[in-house]
Length: 169
Image (cartoon, rainbow, N blue to C red):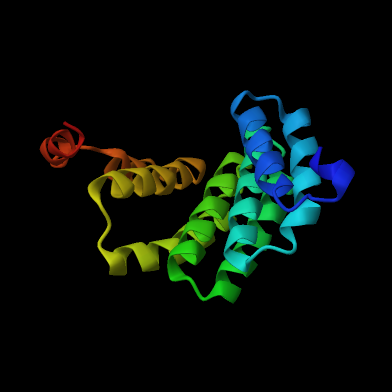
Protein backbone atom coordinates (compact mmCIF):
# COMPACT_ATOMS: atom_id res chain seq x y z
CA UNK A 1 0.00 0.00 0.00
CA UNK A 2 2.77 2.42 0.98
CA UNK A 3 4.45 2.35 -2.40
CA UNK A 4 1.19 3.06 -4.25
CA UNK A 5 0.61 6.27 -2.24
CA UNK A 6 4.29 7.29 -2.27
CA UNK A 7 4.75 6.72 1.47
CA UNK A 8 7.90 4.62 1.45
CA UNK A 9 9.79 6.07 4.42
CA UNK A 10 9.09 2.93 6.45
CA UNK A 11 10.04 0.53 3.68
CA UNK A 12 13.71 0.58 4.59
CA UNK A 13 13.02 -1.16 7.86
CA UNK A 14 10.61 -3.62 6.21
CA UNK A 15 12.94 -4.40 3.30
CA UNK A 16 15.92 -4.49 5.61
CA UNK A 17 14.18 -6.84 8.05
CA UNK A 18 13.08 -9.10 5.21
CA UNK A 19 16.66 -9.19 3.91
CA UNK A 20 17.96 -10.19 7.35
CA UNK A 21 15.31 -12.90 7.68
CA UNK A 22 16.17 -14.36 4.28
CA UNK A 23 19.88 -14.24 5.15
CA UNK A 24 19.15 -16.23 8.32
CA UNK A 25 17.10 -18.67 6.24
CA UNK A 26 20.10 -18.91 3.87
CA UNK A 27 17.96 -17.78 0.94
CA UNK A 28 20.63 -15.41 -0.29
CA UNK A 29 19.09 -14.58 -3.65
CA UNK A 30 15.90 -13.28 -2.05
CA UNK A 31 17.90 -11.56 0.71
CA UNK A 32 19.94 -9.74 -1.93
CA UNK A 33 16.74 -8.60 -3.67
CA UNK A 34 15.49 -7.08 -0.42
CA UNK A 35 18.87 -5.50 0.30
CA UNK A 36 18.76 -3.91 -3.16
CA UNK A 37 15.30 -2.49 -2.44
CA UNK A 38 16.41 -1.15 0.94
CA UNK A 39 19.66 0.28 -0.40
CA UNK A 40 17.98 3.09 -2.34
CA UNK A 41 16.03 4.21 0.70
CA UNK A 42 18.84 3.89 3.24
CA UNK A 43 20.89 6.56 1.45
CA UNK A 44 18.65 9.17 3.11
CA UNK A 45 19.08 7.74 6.60
CA UNK A 46 21.59 8.85 9.23
CA UNK A 47 25.11 7.58 8.64
CA UNK A 48 25.05 5.16 11.60
CA UNK A 49 21.97 3.45 10.08
CA UNK A 50 23.77 3.28 6.74
CA UNK A 51 26.71 1.66 8.56
CA UNK A 52 24.47 -1.01 10.09
CA UNK A 53 22.84 -1.68 6.73
CA UNK A 54 26.22 -1.92 4.98
CA UNK A 55 27.59 -4.26 7.64
CA UNK A 56 24.60 -6.56 7.37
CA UNK A 57 24.75 -6.60 3.58
CA UNK A 58 28.42 -7.56 3.81
CA UNK A 59 27.49 -10.31 6.25
CA UNK A 60 24.93 -11.66 3.75
CA UNK A 61 27.67 -12.01 1.13
CA UNK A 62 29.98 -13.56 3.72
CA UNK A 63 27.35 -16.18 4.57
CA UNK A 64 26.87 -16.84 0.87
CA UNK A 65 30.64 -17.31 0.54
CA UNK A 66 30.88 -14.45 -1.96
CA UNK A 67 33.96 -13.15 -0.23
CA UNK A 68 34.96 -10.49 -2.76
CA UNK A 69 31.50 -8.88 -2.50
CA UNK A 70 31.66 -9.18 1.28
CA UNK A 71 35.08 -7.53 1.37
CA UNK A 72 33.82 -4.65 -0.79
CA UNK A 73 30.84 -4.06 1.51
CA UNK A 74 32.90 -4.38 4.70
CA UNK A 75 35.33 -1.79 3.27
CA UNK A 76 32.34 0.53 2.76
CA UNK A 77 31.31 -0.12 6.35
CA UNK A 78 34.85 0.66 7.52
CA UNK A 79 34.80 3.96 5.61
CA UNK A 80 31.45 4.82 7.22
CA UNK A 81 32.75 3.91 10.69
CA UNK A 82 35.77 6.17 10.17
CA UNK A 83 33.50 8.98 8.94
CA UNK A 84 31.33 8.49 12.03
CA UNK A 85 34.50 8.75 14.14
CA UNK A 86 33.32 5.68 16.05
CA UNK A 87 36.27 3.62 17.31
CA UNK A 88 34.08 0.61 18.21
CA UNK A 89 32.48 0.45 14.74
CA UNK A 90 35.93 0.90 13.20
CA UNK A 91 37.40 -1.94 15.25
CA UNK A 92 34.45 -4.22 14.49
CA UNK A 93 34.74 -3.43 10.77
CA UNK A 94 38.44 -4.29 10.89
CA UNK A 95 37.64 -7.54 12.73
CA UNK A 96 34.94 -8.37 10.17
CA UNK A 97 37.37 -7.79 7.32
CA UNK A 98 39.90 -9.98 9.09
CA UNK A 99 37.35 -12.77 9.39
CA UNK A 100 36.39 -12.59 5.71
CA UNK A 101 40.03 -12.64 4.67
CA UNK A 102 40.49 -15.78 6.79
CA UNK A 103 37.60 -17.42 4.94
CA UNK A 104 39.16 -16.31 1.65
CA UNK A 105 42.47 -17.81 2.85
CA UNK A 106 44.31 -14.49 2.58
CA UNK A 107 46.32 -14.64 5.77
CA UNK A 108 48.37 -11.45 5.29
CA UNK A 109 45.27 -9.31 4.82
CA UNK A 110 43.50 -11.08 7.68
CA UNK A 111 46.40 -10.42 10.04
CA UNK A 112 46.57 -6.77 8.95
CA UNK A 113 42.92 -6.06 9.79
CA UNK A 114 42.90 -8.16 12.96
CA UNK A 115 45.97 -6.30 14.23
CA UNK A 116 44.16 -3.01 13.66
CA UNK A 117 41.08 -4.25 15.51
CA UNK A 118 43.22 -5.76 18.26
CA UNK A 119 44.77 -2.40 19.14
CA UNK A 120 41.33 -1.07 20.04
CA UNK A 121 40.16 -4.15 21.91
CA UNK A 122 43.38 -4.43 23.94
CA UNK A 123 43.06 -0.80 25.05
CA UNK A 124 39.42 -1.34 25.91
CA UNK A 125 40.03 -4.42 28.02
CA UNK A 126 37.66 -6.86 26.39
CA UNK A 127 35.23 -9.28 27.98
CA UNK A 128 36.51 -12.87 28.12
CA UNK A 129 34.03 -14.11 25.51
CA UNK A 130 35.20 -11.49 22.99
CA UNK A 131 38.78 -12.41 23.80
CA UNK A 132 38.06 -16.07 23.00
CA UNK A 133 36.39 -15.06 19.71
CA UNK A 134 39.23 -12.72 18.76
CA UNK A 135 41.91 -15.26 19.68
CA UNK A 136 39.99 -17.79 17.56
CA UNK A 137 40.32 -15.47 14.58
CA UNK A 138 44.01 -14.87 15.25
CA UNK A 139 44.50 -18.62 15.72
CA UNK A 140 42.88 -19.25 12.34
CA UNK A 141 45.38 -16.89 10.73
CA UNK A 142 48.21 -18.75 12.44
CA UNK A 143 46.88 -22.05 11.05
CA UNK A 144 46.71 -20.53 7.54
CA UNK A 145 50.34 -19.48 7.95
CA UNK A 146 51.28 -22.93 9.29
CA UNK A 147 52.33 -21.34 12.60
CA UNK A 148 50.97 -24.22 14.63
CA UNK A 149 52.65 -23.36 17.96
CA UNK A 150 51.18 -19.86 17.82
CA UNK A 151 47.79 -21.32 16.83
CA UNK A 152 47.86 -23.72 19.78
CA UNK A 153 48.66 -20.88 22.19
CA UNK A 154 45.88 -18.68 20.81
CA UNK A 155 43.28 -21.43 20.66
CA UNK A 156 44.07 -23.03 24.00
CA UNK A 157 41.49 -22.48 26.72
CA UNK A 158 43.88 -23.74 29.38
CA UNK A 159 44.01 -21.30 32.31
CA UNK A 160 40.82 -19.61 31.07
CA UNK A 161 38.40 -22.50 31.42
CA UNK A 162 37.26 -21.55 34.92
CA UNK A 163 36.69 -17.92 33.91
CA UNK A 164 34.73 -18.99 30.85
CA UNK A 165 32.51 -21.30 32.86
CA UNK A 166 31.73 -18.52 35.33
CA UNK A 167 30.94 -16.08 32.53
CA UNK A 168 28.59 -18.45 30.74
CA UNK A 169 26.74 -19.96 33.72
